[in-house]
Length: 235
Image (cartoon, rainbow, N blue to C red; front, top):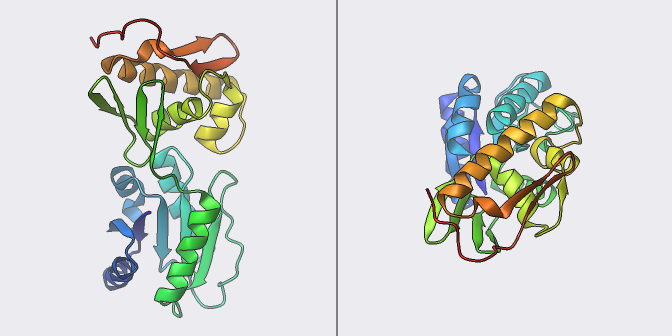
């Protein structure tokens, strides 16, 4: 599970990073609150560890900036000042549930429990999924076929995952909206955004010879089908 440490205090960031190393978690990096969006995009973490914020609102803003940069929900382990330990942090509905701990009293054991709780609740993806000649690495977002490979964006990977998990079945626009944004959205702008992600995904799959396996059904959704005949050569 990749964890990005977000904290303005350099000494505190180093302390939390060291603790994650002892707990044998993959530290995606460490950054300040101001850089959380930029660094989250580069690090592609599963979970944010946000420490040193004075208010729940600051914690919410940090997680929301990372979510927008990643274009997907992200788990959040929030270390809040004493007295805010069990505060219901007002995170947006499409952000994964957060675990809140008291910052000053946190130790390795409580960090481990918090991260394991997030792993269960947030359903952090792991491993690969292989269907109809295509293998997608859920963590790196690398798609492989015909001895070729291409790296997808988080949004492209979410769309492909939704289809690979239901091979040959139609994945409706509403399902793709939930996979991308954490909730069902049906407005025209959302449908246009989904079409854009599918178009860029198909173009990348063309480079590894499987773009034709992604089929669209007008006004309904999309599906990934078994290859027919000889593989289509990459352009």
